[in-house]
Structure formats: C-alpha cells, structure tokens
Image (tube, rainbow, N blue to C red; front, side, top):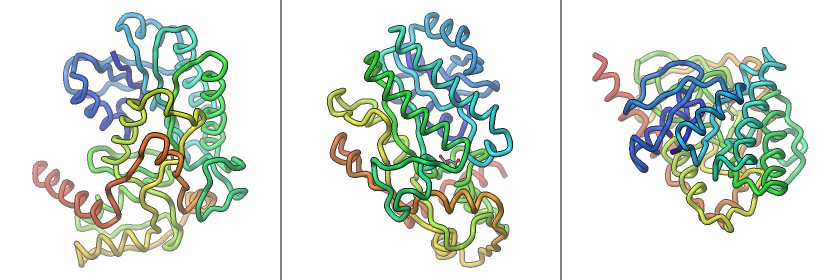
Length: 313
Ligand code: SER
C-alpha cells in the first residue's frame, strides 16, 4: 500500500489520482488533515505531527511507500515561522522514522527551489552549492534534505527527493506559495478577468507543468536504487519565465487578457530564488527529461480550464 500525506493539496490531489491509475484504487491510501473527496473508498484523516497515528495507519494498511507532501508553503510560512518549522520538520521526521523502524521501504520527499539564496548564481543554480534560504519554508527544506541524506547514510532508508520548481496545473489550486501566481493567472484569463500580479513583470522563477512534475516523481521512485545517487535532493528543471512572459503567452491565445502589477512581499521571496536550475544530475542519474514548455503548457492549461468552466455552467 502507498500512503500519501497532504493528499488534499496541490500536488497531492493529482499525484493520488496518478498513483491510483498506476497501481489500482485499493493500493493507494490518501491522507490529509482535512476530510476530502477521493476516488475509491480509501481515505484517512492524518495530522502528520502525530507519529502514533501515522504508525497505526502504516501498520493497519501494511504501507510500503510514503509520499510525504504535507507541508506549509513559502509565503504562508512567513507569517507563522515556528508552527511552519514544527509542521514541516516534525512531519518529515515522523515519516523518516517509519523507514528507520523498517515499516516502509521507500519514501518520497518534495524539496524546492526555496532552498537557494543569494549565495549561489541565481541565473543557473548548481546541484551542490551554499544553501542559505531567506524563508522559514526554505530553511525547513534545507534541513529536510539533510535529514533525508542522514537517514539514508545512517539507517539505509530509501528516501528520494526532487527540488520542485513552481508547479502549474489545472486540476488543483496551490495555497500559500510564492509561485501560485502562475496558476492563478490562467484562472483569471479563462474567466475573462483582469489579473493583478503580486510579482514584478521581470522576476523569473523556474516552473514546471503538473504533468511533468508527476512523471518526475513516478520516474524517480521507480528508478533502480543504485541509480539514485543524490540522497539530499535532485535539482529538477523544466521551463523558466517571468510574469511578463507568461502574460504574453496567454495573450497570444486570449488577446483581450489584461494584467496589472502590484508586487508585495512575495516579490522579495521570488527575487531570492533562482531563475533556473542545473538539473544535469537528474538527467544523467535517472534520465529526467521534461516535455512541456511555456507555449505547450499554456495551450493545454487553457483548453482544460475552459472545459472545466463549461462543465460547471
Ligand atoms: N511553490 C512553492 C512555493 O511557492 C515553492 O516550493 O512556496
């Protein structure tokens, strides 16, 4: 059985479906702190800071793999630093303990572009370099990566991780992140609304389409163990753009679309993150190759969001 934490979140919702399709409804257990609707009849409430409850579920369902997605994201984390640290760290350590205790065989931990700060070249962030992040979320991901590496070296836990760029998809909405604008902008466009962007027009961030992000997780998790050489976290790259560029790509499809810029504190966070990542190690170790670029993603996003809107009406 595969257990997913944070299954009600932006990645969790889509990954749950993808894993259900791949391994069967009866082999995937979505969990979340809030009740939600999932295909099939498996679901359990789980506060990830509660290790007893986690252990109970792992034993009850004979869980062999955990995809640990529950976390507080970068922007929201800044208004609650200590609770963010507690949730993000305790959650991960509880999951890693399931590995150390020999209860589960494999663990996935999503890290992020938020691990970087000004101390690396931000135009092309290296796989290995100084990690001095400016957000609590970033600090928790840096520490989390080191804990993953430690559990692997010390206890042989098979934990695998990628540093995700901002993820864009039509199925679910992100919450509390700095890259969320790149999802919200599509929703505004298909509703015919003017979009007010909280990031300045020229601030680039690395981004990835949800379909590529999910495929990356599955490919990394299915790669032979000996190919997974980086046990902190792999840089994962796809596209990179600034608000002005995504706006131009959408305007090509929807000429009437309008944007205004009102940068807030999230703009500062975005400026401390890289424009793009060097993901050579992911490409050589487990053959990572993204498929979507800004143009093909934009076409696909608009198509699906228009369809969804038509269904709602
Ligand atoms: N997308 C996340 C955020 O913006 C970064 O991992 O917080």
